[in-house]
Image (cartoon, rainbow over all chains, first blue to last red; front, side, top):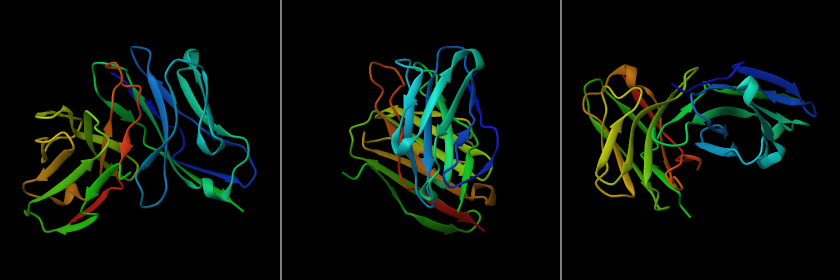
Length: 114
Length: 116
């Protein structure tokens, strides 16, 4: 069965510092992987997705993520944090076909310090 | 472009009362989903639908029922609300291309439900 683990429910970084949010997945078949962002009182918005075309995926707002099959990881990074990046981030996995399900991690709340 | 619209935005129920949450999407998506979001637990799938007239159970279906009579609408019902159903409910839709689930979910803004 597929699953997603996000290490760190809360992460704090200084404005301008590197952002690193960790996601590890478990899947019996090559997965499709997603990162979503949720701002307060809103639904989730897609940041980026991995669908096997390229292992380094660039998303919106300067975020990117690298798919590493050997480590079963899909960590999210941004070189320089901005105050507006403060939000909750969710990693999700889909096995691509047949299951029709997207499984979400428990989320990481990012705090950006001035 | 409305996307996914959920109504109502907020609701307070007493234990034992019933209600229906409505989700509407205008993107002609085949698949629709209901999730609940609770602190520290991420999003958990309640029910989903792969097309008009079809529904299936997710991870946490107990206490909920759903219907998909029209392609654009997906209703979530609580027949007898319990305090454990206090949560934020999100509807989402997607359009799987070629049968593969590499297309992202599109979410509504959620319904905040409190059961006292």
